[in-house]
Amino acid sequence: MLPELPALKLEVDEHHHHKDVYEHTLRVVEQAISYEADYGLEGDFVLRFAALLHDIGKPNTRRLEPGGGVTFHQHDLVGARLAKKRLQALRFDNDTIRDVSRLIELHLRFFGYGDQAWSDSAVRRYVRDAGEQLTRLHALTRSDVTTRNQRKADRLAHAYDDLEQRIAALQEQEELDSIRPDLSGEDIMRILDLKPGREVGEARSFLMELRLDQGQLGAEEAEKRLLAWWSAR
Image 1 (cartoon, rainbow, N blue to C red):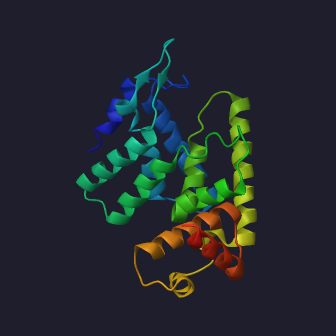
Image 2: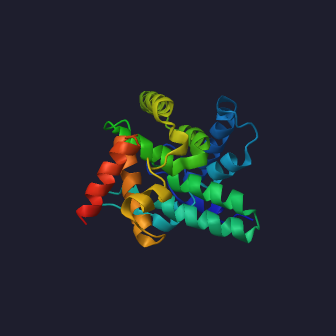
C-alpha cells in the first residue's frame, strides 16, 4: 500500500541520530501520537499520516556532499507531491489529501527559527501559510525532533515555545486566524474605479503583502497606501 516507506530503510539519517530514516519516521509517529492530547487532536488521522509520510521525499532528493555528508534538499516539497499522488491512488477524500500533503510541505518551515529572530511579518506568514493546519503543524514540528542530544532538543523545544507564544500574542492583537487585507475587493474597485479583473487581484495582493509585513493598518491608511502604489505603477 505504501511502497515509499520501505525505501526509507535505505536512507541514512543525515544527522546520524538513527540507523535510517525509517527508524526516525516511526519515532516521529510515536511522538505525534503523544502530542495529540496537548493540542486537542486525539486520534487525529491527518496528523498521524503526515508524520508517517513526512520524509518520503528523501530518497528522491538524496545528494552526497564533499566529505561524506548527505543532504535531502527540498524533500519537503517532493514529499508533499509524492504523498498527494499516493493518497489519490488509494482514493482518499480530497480534504485528507490536501491536508496531509500541506503538512508535509510545511514541516521544515520552523527549523532555523532559533538561529535568527523572525520578524512579526515572518510569523504572520507562517500562520497564513499553515492556515487551518496550524495546530497540526505545531504537533508535527515538535514530533520531528528526535535527536538524542538533550541540549539540542531542549533548545528546539524552547524555540518552538517562543514561536507559539508570539503567534498567540499576534493573534490576540490582530486576529491572525483570518488574515486578510484591510480593504475588500469591493473597496478596491470603488477606490480605484476598477471593474472585476486582474488589476483588482494585483491590488489585493499588494494589500495582503502590506498586511503581512506591517500588520493591521486600518481602512484609511490602507487606502492611502493603495492610492500611492497605484499612482506609482
